[in-house]
Image (cartoon, rainbow, N blue to C red; front, side, top):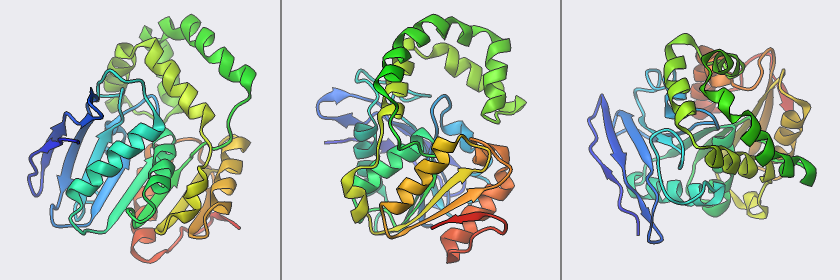
Amino acid sequence: MSNFETILEPTNVSYGKNGLIGGEILELYYKEYGNKHGDLMVFLHGGGVSGWMWDQQIPYFTDYHCVVIDLPGQGKSLGTEPFSIRTSAAKINELIQSIAHEKEVIVIGFSLGAQVLIQMLSLEPNLIDAAIVNSALVRPSGTFIKKMIRPSIKMTFPLVKIKSFSKIQAKTLYIDDAQFDTYFEESSRMKPDTLINILEENMSFEVPDSFQDAQGRILVTAGGKEKSIMKKSASDIVFRNINCTGIIIPHVGHGIPMADPTYFNQMVANWVKDDTLPNGVEELK
């Protein structure tokens, strides 16, 4: 039985945390913004960042009841259990059920958060009305690569605490100067075992069979400058559910919500409202 505590202010921000699942303490920290009477819009961040990656989205979607979540083990969500995509998906589905109150439910996930979103759709095929799956890896890595994760992280992890190294990493994620201090502080605080666990989950994920049963509309995106495995993953996801629409967004790599927030916000708003896709994208068939 979960116990989520929150106080919602109609036009500002409130905070919620301390979920209890299966008798094990696993905190789920989230913030709520916008119009409490609007449709529910949930944001799920990627690995290496947390809910603050959506800072450029929240002011745009003020008509919605927005919920920004720090995934378990990341940001301000702490706990004793190792990170699991499936457990995270189950927890967030439960949170949505507790606050949706018959509203339309829209969920936006990026990278690791997009993998969690695919799992959410697979566990509860009728819960989410519209899903935006951004840059989700669904082709598992080989055994050798998985075995190399732990020794590689153990060897390179001290670099995380060096600002010059973190700035290089931040640039690849399109993290700007205003967000860098938060990124650096969270990266420095993360334990190596937590990062290893997240990477192992990320690189092992594949589309569950039950994803084909998801009933809501699903927009699948990848950047034109992303690695080929990411674009192939997007095609795989589209192939697995008849309700999917897939697009490749040109001139951007891994991180469209932060690389071009204006473009991303308009894309989401237009697609949620009337299925309109941006000009100039490649549609996956």
